[in-house]
Amino acid sequence: MPHTPPAVPEFTNWPSFPFEGNFRVRQLDDPVEVEPLRKGEGSRECTACTSPDDAYIWVGERWRVRAMDRPTGLPMVLILETRSHLDLGDLPNLLAAELGVMTVRLERAIRSLDGVARVHVNRWGDGSAHLHLWFLARPYGQLQLRGTFLSLWDAILPPISEEQWRENLAMVAAWLADFEGRPLAEPPRIHWQAPASFTEGGEAEPTAAAAYGDGDPVSITAEEKPPARDDREA
Image 1 (cartoon, one colour):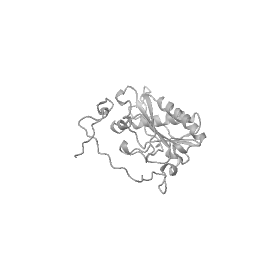
Image 2 (cartoon, rainbow, N blue to C red):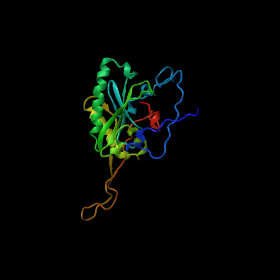
Image 3 (tube, one colour):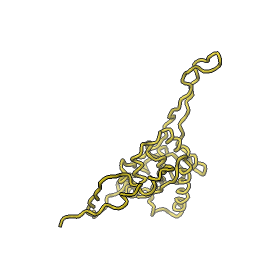
Image 4 (cartoon, rainbow, N blue to C red):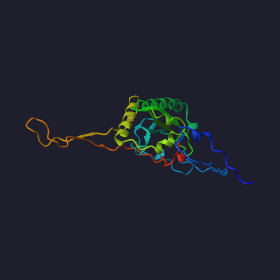
């Protein structure tokens, strides 16, 4: 008897679904007998454990926050990680309680940015055994980005400007540091160039008096961020 593919689900007609056209459901693979090791399990190296503090935008005694290695389509995408090599179900009571505090604190920091309406908090955990939560900022007024598919839209939308991205990172890091820890992200710096000469009226001649530069690079990495969201380790 020929295989009949299942019907396309209704969510493909939702306004938030980022694609249009004709679709068919991919056939589900057979279950494997033994699942592959995640990063940080068995002999597999843990990316988080081997990353130095300067790979993060903010670091504390028991928590660290990292960003992507470049701007993406959303105003902000951040990852909250424990310092200790623990998964969600392994957290002792102290860290379990602090996870709630850090989640709320980071959500508020991201939501304080201009143009952010909501912050989606996600945890998948299929790629790494080291606990990490994703925080994705939904732009204000972009109602089509509401709901389940925000992480897909992040890969589709054109990236925000690097200057704005760095400024957002610095603001979030400073917000967190007001409570504890150390901010490592810095905003873009203004590089001033003195005018070469002045006119009789005291006004500068039309030379480059000031320019915005990227300043010192923010030390951030995102080795775990995949090009496609279905591989996202979270």
